[in-house]
Structure formats: C-alpha cells, structure tokens
Image (cartoon, rainbow, N blue to C red; front, side, top):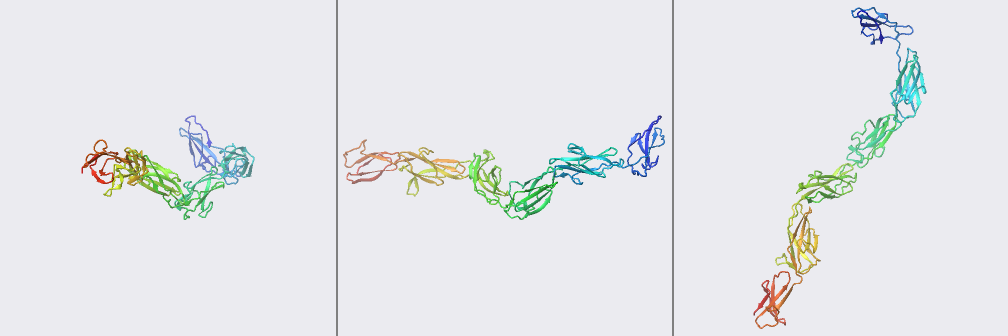
Length: 585
C-alpha cells in the first residue's frame, strides 16, 4: 500500500501513474507505469520483489509517481526514498497434544500440553518473548489467562507448554500462543482444539428383535448394534461369532465401520445350537468396550399344530364366538404368540380379529366385525395361528355357519309298551302305569346346522314340564322315562325340544295321555235304576252298569254265571259305549 499527493490549480489532477523500479524513475519491477486513477493511495500488487541483502544493501527499490491534469499534461516523475525489502513476520503454528503431531483427543483430564513452531521476525531481529493461554474457544482465555508458566522455548521460534489442569471428559480446549517481536509487535496463533475423553464407548445391541432367540435360517443370523462416544467418537468396530460367549469358532474377528454384520455372513451352524455374536467398539483415544449379544439358534421347522374346536354354527344374533384348541407345541423355540381370526379364507381376519392370545391359553372369544343384518345364513372360516420363536407359523381352521332358523318341527307320540298285531308300537290315549312313560318322536330336521340334541319334558299342559323337567337325551328318537309318579286320572303331555348347533330351539307336544291305573265298573241286576234281587222270568236276564274312569271305553263284553259257578253266558262283546244288556234265551 502506498500514498501520494499532487495538485493542479488550473484544471486539477485527472489521474496518477505509479511505477516500481530498481533505479530512481525506473519501471522494471512493476513492468511499466500503472494507472491509479484519481486516487491518492492504492495497493500495488502482482510484484515479484527480491529480498534486500543486509550486507550488500542490494537490491533497493524506488517508487515513482507522475500526475496528469485534465488538459492531458503530465508532470515530471517524483521518486521515493530507497525501499528495502525484508521478510515479513511469520506467525507460527500451534498444535495440541504431548507430541509435535497435532492431536484432536487426549485420554486424561489432568493437564494440557501444546507445541508451537515457525515464529519469525527478521526485520525485528527475532522474538522478545512468548506467552500462552487456554480457553474453551479459539483465542479465548477463560480456562487459563496468558502466562509464561510451564512454557519452554527451544529456539528458532519453537517451543512447548504444559499446565496441570482438571478437565471433565467431553471438554474441548484451545491453546493460544502469543509471540512478541523485538519491535513490540504481537504474533498470535490458536490450535484447532483438543477434547478430553476419559470414558469408554457405550454399546447397545439389537438382534433384529431383542426378544427373539431364534431365526428361521442360518442366513438370517446377524448382529446389529448402536455405538456412542460423545467425547472422541468411535474409531472402528470389530465383531466375531462363536458357539459360546466371546468365542470366535464360528466367525473370525472382522473390523468394520458399519453397525451391523453383513447379511448371511454366518452359515452351516448346527440346528438348535445358539450362536453368540460379540462386538468391540474402539474410540479415538484407545478406549474399548465389548458387548456380547444374546445367543441365537436356528429353528427352521413350524410348530406342531393344534386342532381348533369351535361351534359348527351360531345364531345370527350372536356377536361373538368362543373357540378352544389343542395347544400348539414347538420343542425347539417354543410358542411365542397366538392369534384368533375369522374371514372368508383360512388365515383371513376380514370378519373378526386377529385377537392376540397368550401362548399359555387355549380358549378365546372372537368378536365379529360385521353387523347383525349381514349374518343370516352365511359361512365363515375361523383360524387359530401360532408363531414359534423363529416366527414360523402353523395354523388350524374350522368352518363356522350362521344359522338364523330353528329346526323344522317333527312329531311327538306317547306309545304303549306292547305291540299290535302289525308289529308296530301303538299310539295310546290312556295307559295304566303311573311310574313310566314311553315317548317317540321323528321328523325334526335342520338343513343349516343340524340338530345337536333333544330334550324331553312331561307336564300337565302343552309345553309344560311340571311332572318331569326337560332333560337332555342326546340323539335317540325314543325314550322310556321311569321312576315317575302320575296319579290316576291325570291328563299329561310329552314335549320334545329339538336344539340345533346354533342353539335355536323348536318344541313339539304330543296328544294328551290319561293315566288309568284304577278303572272301576259297578254292575246292577235288571234294567231299573237300582239293583234287582228277584226276577219273575226264567227266560230273561238283564243287567246295567256304571264305568268310573276318564279313559274312553274301547271294548265292552258281559257274561252270566250261576252262584255255583256254572256258566250261563260266556263273555260276549257288546256295542262300544253301551251301559246295559239283556239275555232272553
């Protein structure tokens, strides 16, 4: 940078021209005159000047300036005093660490060390002294103000400094060297900082899913991890694999900058034998941390499936179904989870679920995912699905029908225990026994879900069961009930309830049956109102009778015998319903 000044009282200075040369007025160093405009100062750059030898005082340089006024007239050149070219002051370099090689991290926090070199001041004849400071930022002095304590100068602008200081792990400090030339000028440089690291790296590992101890194939075995060192950072990782913790008999020590093992790196391991992955993290100051992942074995077979048991049908108003199953088993990796679902296909959950079920349970309720109006006479598939520790699935499914109608009504009859001439049991209106009854039924059908069971009850009214409560009789078509107590003259009914798989019921009642255990007939001689003791005719005999029984008369016969037992008239059938008879022979 140079300055100059000129004047012209008439037209004024329009521009200045400047040149540098090795002789007064010369232009050899600047390559000619340079137009500087009307400015009275400026930077003359692009020069290639040699240093002046202090012994010979050569070369010397001169700056020449001339001016041009607004009329285009130039002044004579004016030369400066001789210019001596000396080497500029050189600010040195400051490094961190206990060696001259710059360090970014140190593994202790009890002192700070710095080195410096390259400080020069030829024009001032060297340095008068040095001082140093420590701060938490470049050129800062908040940790240690400028001091000469702990500083050693080697000569030739170099030296070192060390200060005992307590620093926490993770703290970064910067060292600043201030050199003072013999001319009193200050040259200052700051290091790029050093971070204290007194802690090991932190490692955590995940084996795909930290809860899993099995994989479905050896190609799936692997380790992923997370490493952290907030002080000096992770320099590298190393991993290996073995058949027991920290062993390397399956996979040799391998260094990497990745945070997981390559896919399929471990193969041909024995089924069911765990593989242990180990990982080592090394930080930039040499601290190491090692972690062993959980043992992981290969299980490539599905669980042994259980057998699902649900109702084969349910009513259309039901909003859920409860199913049970034989437990799934897996001798290698165990059952990890179960889920119950319902859809149009096995394994689908379009219409219900999936409901997560603990592996120790074998029954669960499944709520439907559709409205009541969508349930009439439809079929679905219920599936129980189990996963083992390697996430291999096994399942069992069953068809579930929606039945909205009860069974079709059949016929119920009370029959007599004896057989007719045709060989068929006869339907009766009366019977003598007070302690047992024989009931038959037929014609109950259910096309949707089938009849699952029948229940029979005996009562004194249609559909009633006050004599014998409704009792399940499984699936026969007739039953004999005994150990009853039915008084003489009582009218009873047999009712059969047919229940389908969905739980819908139809009930049908038989015709009435009258118990006639004590029928009584009173016979009177003669045709009058009373009983005749005498009769005037030897050719005519007559009698009338009264039947005391609720059971209708199906056959009437009469006979006549003498007092001595002789038979006058054997039993002879009469018209059904008659209450008198005459014998005139």
